[in-house]
Length: 212
Image (tube, rainbow, N blue to C red; front, side, top):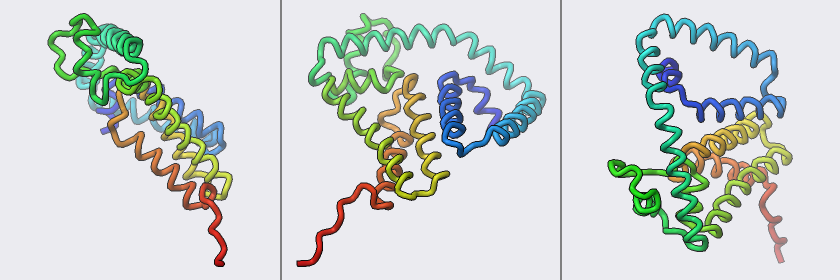
C-alpha cells in the first residue's frame, strides 16, 4: 500500500503532508528527533519498495511525467473557468454542482470529452457555485473549526489529539487548493471532530441557568 501511495507522485498530497508535519513540529507534538528517525525509516522503506516494486514505480513515474504538463494545463483551464463563473455570478453563483454544467461554456469547450469536470480547487469551485456570500460562510465554517480546536486545547483537551486534529484540518485545507474536497468526508469529519471536542470540554457551551 505505501508503495502504491508513493507511486501516485501526488505533489498536492506531498505539500499537504509537509504542512501537517510542520504544524506538529511547531506545536511541539512531534519532536525533531522523532521526525528525523521517521524520515530515516521511510527512506529505508522507500528504498526497499523501489527495489521490490521497481517496475511499478518506473511505470508510474513515466506515466506521471507524460501527464504532468497536461494536468497543469487542465487545472489552469478550470481555475480560469471558475473565476469567470464567479465574476459573472458573484452573489448567488450557479448553484451546488453547477460548475460541471457551466464548465463547457465558460471554458469555451476546452475539454469537449470531459463529462464530469471539477475545478480541482475547492475554494474556487465553492465560490463559483455559491457566490461570494456562500463562499464566506463556507470559509467561516472552516475557521470556526480551527478556533474550536484551539479553544478545546486551551480548555484542557488532550494536547496530542487536538494538535493532530488541527494538523489534519490544515492538511485537508492545503490539499483542497489542488482538489475539490467540499463533497468528501475528510473536511467535514475534521470540522465535526474539532467542534465536538470544544463542546466536550465545555469551552464553547454556555453555563447552565440556575434552578429558579
